[in-house]
Image 1 (cartoon, rainbow, N blue to C red):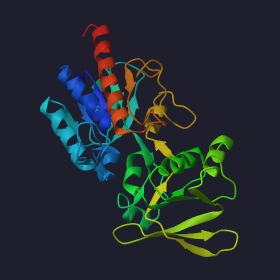
Image 2 (tube, rainbow, N blue to C red):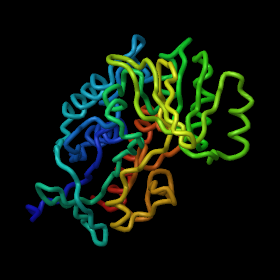
Image 3 (cartoon, rainbow, N blue to C red):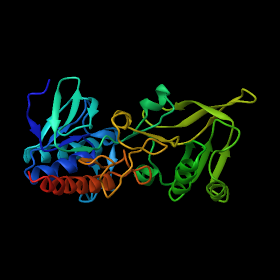
Image 4 (cartoon, rainbow, N blue to C red):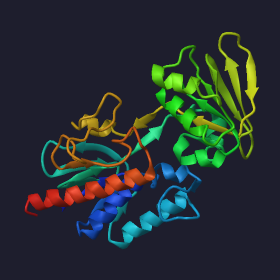
Length: 311
């Protein structure tokens, strides 16, 4: 049961979007609650070097960046709860947010739960994440200058990632588990016309090789059963993302066909008083800096919304 206290705003998610929203909300003296989950910091906690976040000319480790942001929001009075949201009730105001530890009432909510990259679910892949295995070419491609790479996937994202990586890599091999690629014709042709890109279709990735860094990828050709090792220094997994929005969709928040939360006006959702920021709404950019920017927008929108209530 709740203790009867009604908060001004609750922010759900502790990546760059949620923490930036908390920073702005706290500085506006809204006394925000941030429900961070059991693993605060979002996807950047699994990232080694971050060189494309403004203000760090020498780069910064992903966990260090998130720790700094966490300290900053605490400095301005944000209350951080390491709990997981289990359900939400947006049918009446104040809204009710339930976690495994308690229930919280709030006048507004900012959903900033992000999106998780889909992985191949290989033990060797998980062991080498951040050590040559990545799911974000624009984040990590710069570190693979002059390297040979594999991109796993067959859709538009895989083609786009592969094309981008050729700016840095010597070669990129796209490995797809089906005989036919799912990418649109224009994206597939663009990759096919790139002299640095090779294709291996109808093949499954069995293992990522290497102890402390990627040295190769073992694949199996589905039709023949033949196994092959492709010597590379990096693997980029481009088989899509899953937005963390199911709980909120069940509570009436509108999502698109891929499960991303739909915005109606800037950061506003279809339910008045519920706002969204970051990758849970953004299938296109998926960058820490764009997520942070949207977190700022959401907090400013919440502030104006609360003012409109006369509170």
